[in-house]
Image (tube, rainbow, N blue to C red):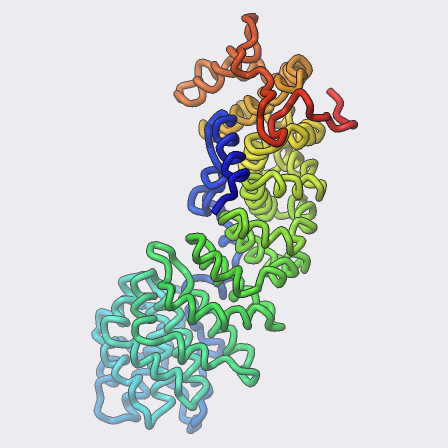
Length: 524
């Protein structure tokens, strides 16, 4: 996989860094950083949704509405159950519609009451009344709302045999019936990986994607896209390879639709798929959607920027080549504005993405510098929301671990020392350790440049030395060891440690600190 020179460079990198980490270890997966952007999603983009009646006093329109009288909403559950199990289709319909109305209440619908009454098996059975689309629609609506509940409520619907019947209804000539089936299946697939995989096993994907056409109404397409996104959700385990192969082409097409809700949910689907192994990331990269994702970053539409940034961030947790594919689409042109975004979550997500880019090759680090992103990154480090600051810490530390001398100098020019030192008083031991790693890396570079005294002075003026000395008493073992090491190596009165003297025999000049030219505008 690596050429000989690349292997040597990787070996030098591991031996030089304080932690001995390579780029794979420096890159951080979504689960490790707990970014919570999904809180910004609107209700209609959630994992499950209820179908609330807009006009509760009238029967919903259906393809063969017979203009029947309004169904009373005061009927108790016992009466509803009696009518649902009636042999008279007209009486059945009254019972089903009454159940649906109860379950469509905006607040506290009696899901468990209906379940415990024993109505669910009968509602599932009535999905199969092919000669009565109104009955199918009403039963599907009621079951959709039950399936929008907790896992046990959803499983009650599944265990009654609803999934194959709902999939059959995807081929219904009655559009309202079909759309309600899509909605119900979305709730079921969104419950978790086991029900998602069960729906796939029952054959949901092909009839679902067959519904996508130029003639599909926008409202119907929104439900279809949302259900497709739920089929991509969850990663323990992730969707099967076969499912991904079937899903990606259609979702790629939906990403280019002109409706923002359709595009947003298609993009969330890709964010779920890329929050996985490099093989899954590669499947998305090969779909050719990265230019579209980059475009979405430029729209200033938060509902589009958010999932696009999430997906791009997930892709750059992959291999160097996958990261490079993103960079070649000029994604970094948008990152200064993202790092200065008025939403703290966007700043945090942008910093997390950059942390995985600075964990890559020196060429990729250079791209971050060339796009003048270090000042904005340091601004987040000093003034951002705390969660964004933590991501900026990782981005900075990764640069100091894998960057060239010149690249670390650019970081110093951007004023990184003061905000790094300011953060040494936080209570997060892990992040303190990461900050200390950055400071140690910077000082190691300064020694090799013969600028140790100047950089030590910067740290002292920023109050860093006092803070590091205090950390030598920290209760966390990693923190106090890292602090002790920095004081001992760089701030003690003893003779300089020969282990950090300049290297003069590195291949290709890498770490040839005695011959590396310092940037002309570097001032200490």
